[in-house]
Length: 378
Image (cartoon, rainbow, N blue to C red):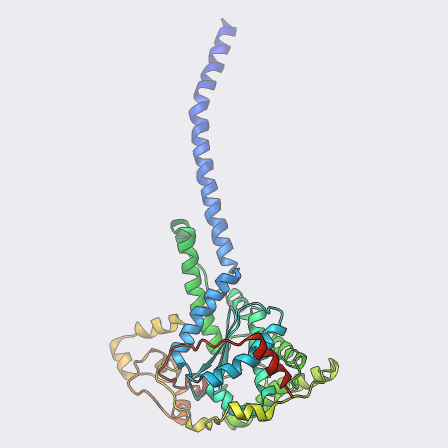
């Protein structure tokens, strides 16, 4: 009897084990699904983008820059910039990135590099520079921001882009990825417009850009010469204005360029002054004549705008002061002189008004044109 009882007990345990195991199996499955959601979120939060997604980021940022400043509709100027830029791109660490060069239609002196190969330079900066070596120095600097993925690294470090665990669990992979890219576009635009790179990124861009220029025959001090012009142009301004707003001290950067040329024995000498003057026939306006827009700080974070919009009605009517007033307000007065902008806390070269046409010019250069252009570097 005892043996029979033991057998029956064992049978009972075996019979009841099955639904219990099924329950545990279900819990295990739920746990696995949870792990996958967490893994997906961790992967998103790492902000690692494929080259295709990087290009998508650049397209989004470029669109915002074009909408902000407009595009200069001059094929001759755009092709000239594209020829210089393409030679630099081919000599870079990412020669097949599909480089695109856009001239922004604004008097502001500035340049912007968006992920995926989109390089923007303003009409104002082209007018300030006086030779091709200077252009190569600036374009080489911006190219390096892209090849080294400085914008992506900046938003990774700031942790300004993330999605909630709830969103990760509820959205499909493609839709979730799209949300992340949209947020990354906004963060990238802010980083680029505000010059939000750290000192090391800027130093790397100066150095690699100078080496790139030297590689294809340009004098490697082009970036330093541009910095000197910007320094002279800004004159007695105490605020950081426009291009290289957050960069290391200008004197330090000029000194670093001189040291680099000596230590690396960079001995190219071409400046191509005559060819530059043939293609760039306009000058930059003095900083006091740069008109600025009430929406000039439109590139500031969307969160800043939201805070402004959430202000009480009476606070909005007062208008406030400084950048917060510029960021949130409607464009009641479309332009202001730079001196007025400075009094309000504006930054002329960043907040400069732009042209009406937002369409990028599709300029192509052939291998034969590039070869002939390169032979003309002298």
